[in-house]
Length: 339
Image (cartoon, rainbow, N blue to C red; front, side, top):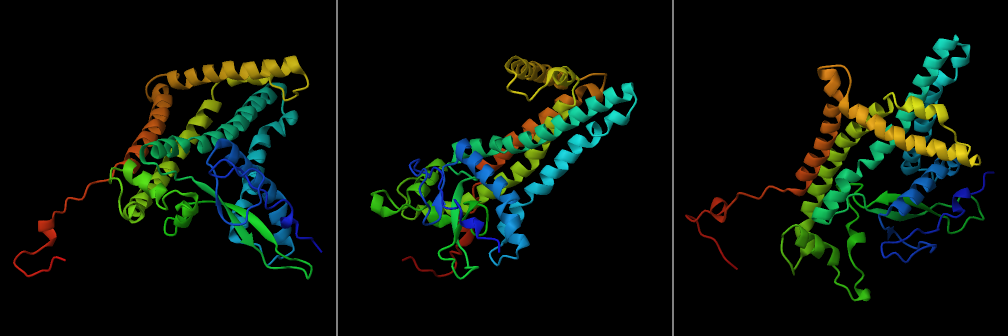
């Protein structure tokens, strides 16, 4: 029998939104601070579970396996496919003649770097939308939270089995976790403190009687527009990353590249070479080569990526004002009551 491994270290908490909940066991769904440290921890947690806990539950036919775990395991084919793409040239270049072997190695190295830059740029570029939108509206469309799952017992000795899933407050546009954004009034703060701040940021006024009801439709609009902008711009920035990896200066980097960090001098030279050739490759991508459209292709790609982020933010934070007036909806020729 496969033991309920999902019960091992599954309650360990990350830093909560108040910054004080390190190492505390979760007893209920909890907002998490959207920091790089927390996001890294969440990523590591999902990565480890995708290769260990979730496949084990699936193979034994666990009644607690769910769609969240299925989606999380999508990391596996992505990484395996990336590894195969990286090895497609370097794995067989020993069978090529010397000249072809060199060309194959250069192509394989650039493909590998392209895969890495693709993933990095696709993820980092989401902040180009999320951060400005949060700064201008107060709405963090990537706000994470820890969800406590109470699982069904799979063995007679199983009691109080829980697991932790990491979701986002606005993961579902139809059913956001509004409840997590209200204050517990026992701490002395207004229940609608979050919504009051958003209302003020959006110019809806202060000291509103029901600020939550006023801003919820606007928040949904911001989330939908931001998600659309991230979907478009992230792939354009990922394309920039791939184009950057295809530039010639990286050949100099791979000539001295090493991951053997215990060889201090060689590893340090490798790091320095990466920095130098990153700058050179960026300049080469921007300046282009050849003539006509080919020479301008780098500028066009970078320009489209930047423009998609700028327009995406602008579209998300600017809401058209209603042009309806009272005279448009009230027919003065008919009777009506004013309470």
